[in-house]
Length: 128
Ligand SMILES: [Zn+2]
Image (cartoon, rainbow, N blue to C red; front, side, top):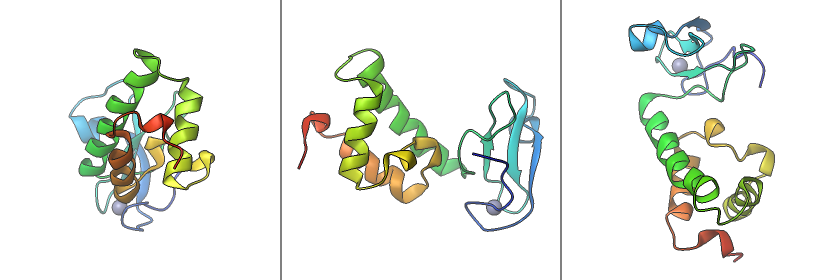
């Protein structure tokens, strides 16, 4: 993803790259984020300065975190499938292109759709 100019949550153009102390009160990690000055949606950056995903409000960030916690343990610890294989299954079941299947890009609706899938028993082997 390249620099963010328009807020993914509210459509405002008051999106700026800021110190992430604007969110946390002090700087964490690489210290940078993209921040919407209208709705406060935000997202961290890679060290390169590129955004990690789309701007998200607090509730969407919580949903993304839940998705990641559930999903990541499957490939990282339980090794039920490769990471790529899991994303492929998820994209298929969500009926979205694999290029869009990243939790950091999801807004509320897609997070909820993903959670519904990945909380099912052995969802990764379900090709229906
Ligand atoms: Zn906004």
